[in-house]
Picture 1 (cartoon, rainbow, N blue to C red):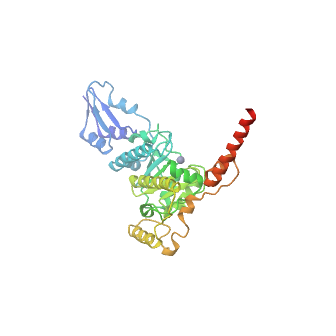
Picture 2: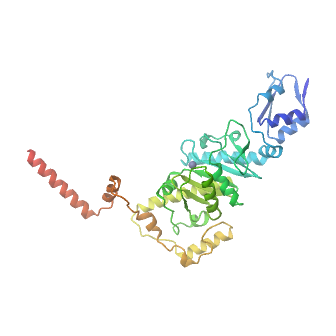
Length: 355
Ligand SMILES: [Zn+2]
């Protein structure tokens, strides 16, 4: 009988493999078994396995060479919970059509390190063993080497660096909010109470190369006062006090932009929440310890421009064919009737000529 002891188990854990398979006449010592449990390594006894444990260790997936403390953290119960949450929120993003292809990414703070999604994977089909561990500079230090950390991790880290309360960051390309980001329209306020309290003002950050240090710095400047930020000509990034909270900010932001779009198509009485009522909502928000760039403002300074103007009267910038279409859409009934009359007369004239 061959014994597989604590020292050998420690060496095996360093490979980053998540499953220890053994069989034949190999037996684990209690110390080795405890180490595997601590590191969340699944121990499988397979009577038919002929390969000795040392061979199994050598053929395990290659992994990043993390230092002892980072590796222990990466394999801790806390990390496991966060990895599961990241996979679940990724799935929700994909199901809700927030991410096309392999777009979007999620991350969570883990001590002095950060767990994040890998590049090149649909967020709807993440598995916990795909999640990577990075340091504050974005260097990948643990995880299966098959999975490289998202190329946009620097955007997340820009937020973590300036917002200690940020426990998680979500980035996605949800259709409605991304449309606002493309159009460069900041969603107006004073229209829906939940948005005032749970998200607040949503700025549009100027376009920078995705994942660049410049984008990271810009987001770091905006994030202390904004939990949701539209990234110009790109998408949306949110932070939260948990992975689910970051996801909630994404969901609320996109639903709000969608509601604004629908409302802008309706004949409207242009009602708004009165400024003193918005003030009450912001007081409530302050008590909840949530950030907002309007906390110090007086009621009279809130809602100073009509939010309906911001979503309703979109300026038309050039006489392109697309713009000509927009002009037709804004014709009055009388103008439209005149046009139809003119066309009918022309058609009748042509018909009478050919007859
Ligand atoms: Zn993106």
